[in-house]
Image 1: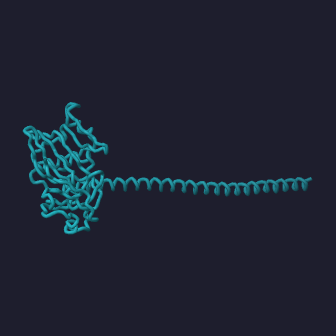
Image 2 (image 1 turned 60 degrees about the vertical axis):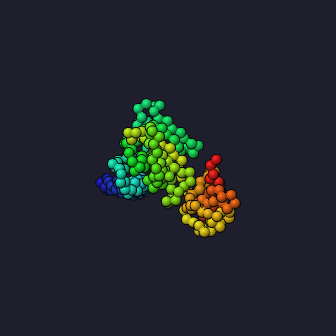
Image 3 (image 1 turned 90 degrees about the horizontal axis):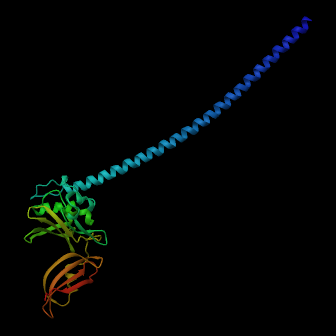
Length: 287
């Protein structure tokens, strides 16, 4: 009887040990599976976070680069503006407000009807009557700064260097500070601008026929070669390089004023400074 009890007890112990062993082995496998799954999820999460961080970093870098480029451009424009020296002027150009849109001119005019302007078919403001600055103009230099302050309204990028002062006119009521347009120092035909003020120097408007120039100012044809294209002259009065603009064309030309040999009348001719073609010729006689 005792032997049977011992045998039963032994079997029970062995069976229990087997169950425990099986349970432990199963636990180890589950643990390994869990560890494997967790590792894979961790790797995927890390990759996703890395990609997101890379995208964020890329976007931040792009934004910073764009901002830096914009700042550099603005700094360059400011440097160009401040590099110009003005002798007869009490205005600090760094303090001058550059008008971005014509609507900003209403800040200088008390009543809505005090401001009138005309826009051509290209979107240029070619005529404006009303106050256009918050400072007075009493000299050509100050008039040029006033022109610079509204240059964006007629699509000009560098009024300080694209206009040269010619004269001041007075009609008994208003002053007209007149400027001719140039490109690399070469006159642009028909290109001009005027700043208008009252007798106290308050700006009352501007007029512009500015033409954005997109051609080179390099020439391959000499003046002597250009003169060969004018066959009927006997006297030359004046010659100069001029950018001829008419009928939506832009041509670098030799402008030649001369007297014709057949009728002794004054003529002007424009000869292409690169091809020799006479692009325009007319009599200057006024009847």
